[in-house]
Image 1 (cartoon, rainbow, N blue to C red):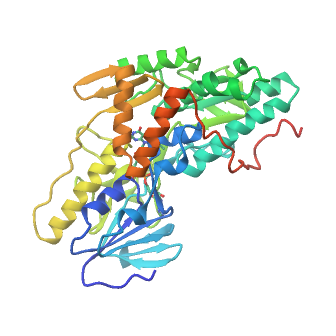
Image 2: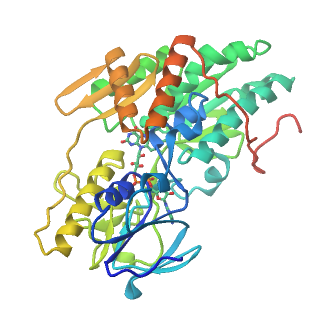
Length: 432
Ligand SMILES: Cc1cc2nc3c(=O)[nH]c(=O)nc-3n(C[C@H](O)[C@H](O)[C@H](O)COP(=O)(O)OP(=O)(O)OC[C@H]3O[C@@H](n4cnc5c(N)ncnc54)[C@H](O)[C@@H]3O)c2cc1C
């Protein structure tokens, strides 16, 4: 890997997401050699992926080059690689570019989509966990409308204009709202020869309420906002099968749809090599103690989505969200330095700063620990928090300018098919 041995202990961090980046920041310019490894050379701001998918933002405005963040940091190395396996007995990791030994290992690999073992669904649905996947979705949405123009059969046209979003958590709600705004403001102008009223957006939620991690007020208001935007909200309904055309559900209801977007769950992005007892089978998350140390290990830690730290308040682990990841990374960096210097360690206590989701223009819901509110003010708070949290001045500026432009002009100018979506499993209505 071309990383020199130093007299300082080596800390290897796998993953430059919210957790890994926060840990790396806390360890910069200390008497340590820090090696950050990621399969992408950028950090992804996942909360805004849905805006990339719906033509509201450029993909590079929500990505930040990992090397740039550490340009002026001594003893810091970044390597672009896929980590394939951990060898805890040898204190080594195996990667796509070679082996690397470590004194301390931090696993911050985040999460991946959970299809709950249904391979057919996995083959045919669209995911939205990364920038390339969001770009695929953006292309596919637009390609479907281009194809809808060409088909003469009414049923086929309706299928191409029928969107099913599975999962009524923040991702599903935000995506359904953004699609509804495209239907209202963009598509009738771009496709005057199509009857856009035929476009349907179905949001399917397995339980009895949307945004189940939020308050009852937020859940109810989000549903009202979506219904006003002409989204069909289906509750207590589970998707059980999708063959690329027909969505089958747990009830009689079925949908003929060219696009199904799966936002129904995530599971830990685990790496092979750890003792099987360290991982929770259902969620694929790694069991850690209150100091983020992996079960039965001396020098391996896990933070962020991948880590399952069971506490009294969070028995099944902390919510898989940015704040727990950032806070765990920050504290772990402090604790590692304390451990090396023989000082006492601090147990992790999650400081819940609140949860929010946006449904569309002037429509958001915010639950703060002591205050819950919805509507226009919530929408401004949502925008401010997301702008503030984005990494890099350039990204903040571009996103801000885009939002102002989109707000004033009722537009989304990045509705571009730059890289056509290719999937051999995609059903073609025009090539029948
Ligand atoms: C669409 C969407 C919307 C979201 N909206 C919100 C929101 O509004 N608010 C909120 O708080 N949270 C939101 N989240 C959740 C939030 O983004 C995650 O909880 C957070 O990113 C977790 O941080 P992390 O560092 O654990 O993982 P990540 O940020 O996912 O980072 C993991 C990193 O590890 C790298 N990696 C993984 N495996 C390997 C490997 N084998 N080798 C090398 N590198 C690897 C990945 O490339 C990635 O860079 C959203 C998530 C999604 C997908």
